[in-house]
Every structure is written in C-alpha cells, then in structure tokens.
Image 1 (cartoon, one colour):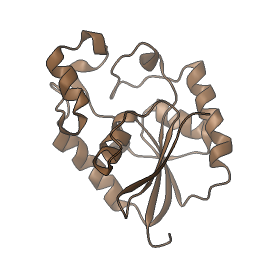
Image 2 (cartoon, rainbow, N blue to C red; image 1 turned 90 degrees about the vertical axis):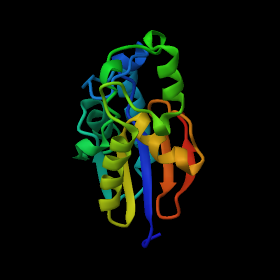
Image 3 (cartoon, helix red, strand yellow; image 1 turned 180 degrees about the vertical axis):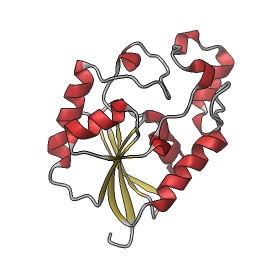
Length: 180
C-alpha cells in the first residue's frame, strides 16, 4: 500500500440546505444538529486508521465535519462541490425535467450558468493528481465523491456522513461505509 494512493472520501454532515433538499454547491451553509452528530459518529471509525494527510473543501460544512470527526484539515477549494449556478438554493422539485435528467447523468452534467462537467472534473483531477502516495482522509461533498466513484462502477449519491474507501492507484472502490 505504500506505493499506492488510498482515499477515504467522506461526505460532510447534514446541513439546513440538505434538510430542505436544496442544491448548495458553493453556498456556504452550516451543519445542523444532526450533521454535527453525524460528524462526531465518524470519530470512532476513523480513530484507529493511520492517515498521511487530512484534507477538506474550504466550505464550512466540510471543515466542521473534519474537525468534529477527526482533526484540523488542510483546506483546498478544489474539493468544493460543483458550482450549480442557477440551481444554487433551488430544490429538486423546482428543477425542470431536463435538469433532473442531466443531474441523474451527473458525469456529464453542465450546471446552467455554473460549472461544466469538464471544469468540475479538471479541478478534481488537478487536486488528486498532486496527492502523494499513501492514505488520505478527505472531507468533501456528495457530487465530488460521485464524480470520483461513478467512473469506477459506483455511481450512487452518498448520504451525509458516509465514507467511500478508494484505491485511486488501481481505480477501484474498496468499500462503502454507511452511517452506523
């Protein structure tokens, strides 16, 4: 494993926007009480694991999840959720059918007046291409995790507080750890 890159990808805890089913890509929303509980519940799962790096998106929901679950992360804005543009703050129910279809086919989704799939994947590729070999704990967002795991055969939207363990060198999802 020393010559491979393993990622522990954690979706942040629940936010008010999640509770209202709103798109909150780059909107900086706080964790709810449930979200803080989800973050703290990650602690016992993560404590026995050795990590070479701890990272998070620079948005408070990811940073606070990292702090409550494990430790102070190094923040990087490239780990942010997709910028959903005109969808930011709107709900699934308020999105028209074409946008819903686009979101379901997330790997190629271009947000209206937001980020394109190419732009989104390029910033993720840049970040993950710079990581050193070893095991990295990464607190991020559902879309980021789906963008990384979808092409590896795991195209499912992760719930808040869930973990995807990925061997990035072999491009393989090793394990999905659902909430206890």
